Amino acid sequence: MITMNFLILLLGLVFLVKGSDYFVKAASTIAKKLGVSEFVIGLTLVAVGTSIPELASSIVASIQQASGIVIGNVVGSNIVNIGLIVGLAAFLSPMKTEVEMLKRDGYIMLFSAVLFFVFALNGELSIIESGIFVLLYIAYVFFLFEEGEIYGGKPYFKEFLKYFVKFKYINSAMKKLNGTNNNKSSDSENGNGNGRIEGGFAKDIFTLVLSCAAIVIGAKYFVEESIFFAELLGVPDTIIGTTLVAVGTSLPELVVTVSAARKGYGSIALGNIIGSNITNVFLILGLSGLLYPIAVAEISLFFTTPVMIVISLILLVFISTGWEIKRWEGVAMMAFYAAFLVVLFYI
Image 1 (tube, rainbow, N blue to C red):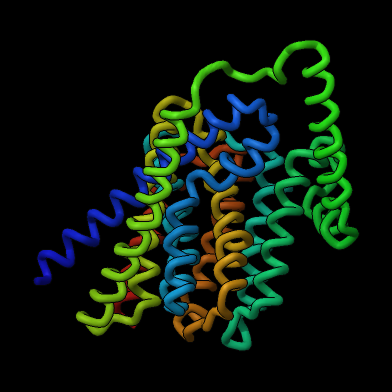
Image 2 (cartoon, rainbow, N blue to C red):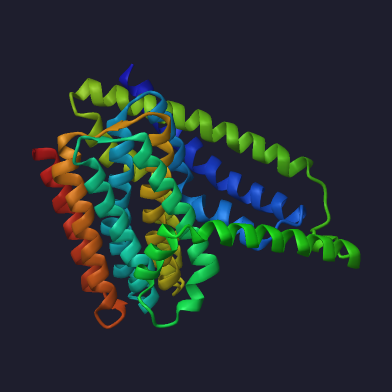
């Protein structure tokens, strides 16, 4: 019985991760064949590509009102991303960093963690607060693609807050849509077909449908079996979410980051991790909380979320020390993560 549940858990995870991989590839191919701009592809598919497992499992958990899984998954994934994945990647190959990683994305990542802690102080992430998270994510993506390059040496984070408060991302979205439409008309007149890639859609659509089904099925059974083991072992679902679910859904980030580090593209991998952490809080928690208000357990409020903030701070410090994350810093982050797990299971 338990063996079968464990096999279903693993199978659900495989469906979730591999389904996400094929979904992004098929969707990107279809988008290019339809002549969709690289901006739109990046905005929708690439931005959340490696976070689809977290998104799917969190939404399923939210529908089942398993708040501990939702919070544990997001907070745990962010801790795993920095402590285990960045730590391992830096240990394999020191990663060059850039000032933008700190001044823009790094500070926004830290801001997202602190804001979640503030919202969670009353023991719940409300629908309104979740909506704010989603708006912040939309603003972040448009700021990243549309506005970031015009600020030069200015403090990006301060400009991002102004950008969000003044609803400038709405104007950016309208301009982009108008620009896209104009480009389509121009390409049509010139007979370019808007840069479409010729070829049939049948195979891509079939892959898209199958991968989407795999994600839904995988998320359903992975979450259900995670809850089963939590109840069987008498472990709070928050801890299961922070460990088992978080590590499982972070496998895409692990594969991408370690592979990039080995090939000498550590800075790209690090940017992906920071972006993923921002996506996890703003988009995934935001969308999950829009379905149902998310209850925040005491262990999340007083332990795991503060740990997420602290390890985010550590990463920002390591980014700025010589603008490189060194091997010993990677070891330090992995040691921090190991200590976190020990304390988590002995609380």
